Length: 125
Picture 1 (tube, rainbow, N blue to C red):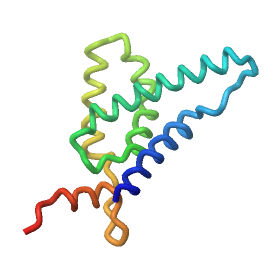
Picture 2: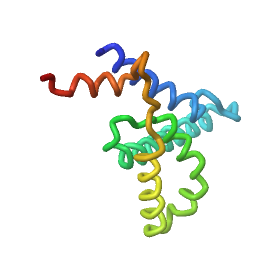
Picture 3: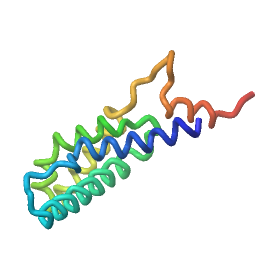
């Protein structure tokens, strides 16, 4: 079980690297490449903060689905970043989507790590 949970951390890093294209740059200038890298890391932190603050209550949260939702709403996020009320309303909307639409698919034959952890945490009679 510990190995499966450890693997989830590896999948998180893979998600961050591939979705945010950390290894790609359009420049040959080392300073620009480093700057792009730091900006991408800040975007990852902001994205992950939004996901965790909106979906922490859902143990079956799908980080992949949540990341896709944020990417779809990125223009709205950028527009709302300077308007506190608009930003809070958008974050609330995203939170509702995270709780109801960004869940892992349940599997009967090969349960995912979240399902196995929930089974471990249930008291046995």
